Length: 186
Length: 391
Image 1 (cartoon, one colour):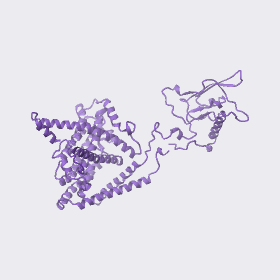
Image 2: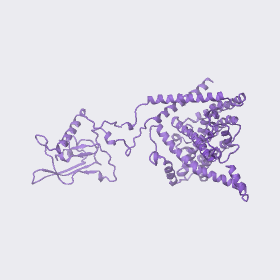
Image 3: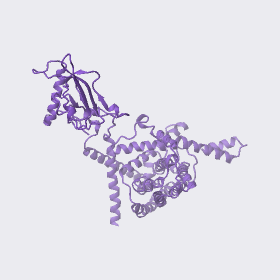
Image 4: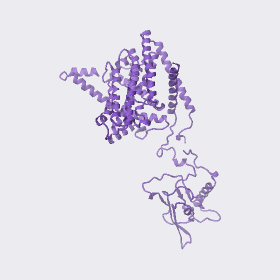
């Protein structure tokens, strides 16, 4: 008889407390992230600065050295260069990156002398055709960048080079990591 | 309703009166089904998903219409357009009829459920008995679905449903007994009329036994409606979908329609039997305005219990079949019997009821609600972290 009553009391009190726990959830924020269309901030902004997303190339500071093409273990980078007879400067004619092939290993960004090729925090590449994943960076031939001995003085190129150098430095030394937006990863 | 039909019959003597009454009731019944039961069952599905989601720190369907309100229409339309698959090995006639029986069982209960002082399809003098009897038709449908599907899961689901619903019919009837004792009638309108609009005049607070009876009734009604924690017939984790496993499209949806609609039946019964039904203070003499107020009163009371059923569903895990049977026969039936006896004794002691006991019971319930609010605050204070919205 005592056990019987104890069972009833235990059932009643535990259900009572259980209901109070679940009821308290009505006053809490839901955890759901309504990706992609109802985000308080774009999800890209919440990723770490050194996130390895799509590759991007700053053609203003690309030296055309082909270091990245040689570093790529799966040959997803294709660069074609040619020497201009008249101006004696290097012209980059093709710079294609097949992002469908790319495995985001980051090996191409390490040998780059200027930090021209770098990962972005962009990752949304869903498309109906595989060909659209090939990023063609060059529409008409571009003159390759030549490092200057006394430092860069062109007001347009200087900040880009600055960013590239910083990118290399941060890749080499993780302690230097300065996240652009301090957000929760996930 | 009946008075109106009687008046109509008196005005048209050339038409047989019985025919007119039957036709009138059928028309009113169809009206209730289409403008009330179907939307309420559908909207309940959306409300349930939202409530459930919030308890689990999710958001729930919020894309179709404002706040996802039209989700139920989208789901209904989708299921109507789906193929109605009839597997080869099933017993076809039974397989086809089963969902209709289930729906008929719960829709027929609405005949005696009051929506207001004058809003009832038929004020049967055995109203509450009729409801408990007619809702048993659901078992027939479920057992039929389980058997005719020719599938072990469905079969087990059907058998479980039969055991469960037939067992819980007994405590359910026994918990209604004290109410019938107190109000002296089986008619749902009579039971409502025996109560007042003020909380302390409700049957729930008539005596301590009725308060317990009220809780037991809710538990039994949940079991009758195959709701979690008693949803063994369709236990997803063990029986795929139980008796509904082989059903697809609209036939499958009909089972769920019955389940959600049944929630409202449970709520309306609790409101009618224990919480004063449609009783409102007589604030106006306009019958239309009064009817509207009465309708909303009982609707809100009923829907509160629908909400509690959803909340319980999100809180408690499913119980085992032996636990289910033990709960019914070892706990609910003896306690319900005790309540009946206790109420009878109470009525001998206080033939007119006791205002002191009523007020004291209201105070007890208020105290429980207060303690509950304290517990909720305690759990909220201990809650850790915030969602993505805090970024």
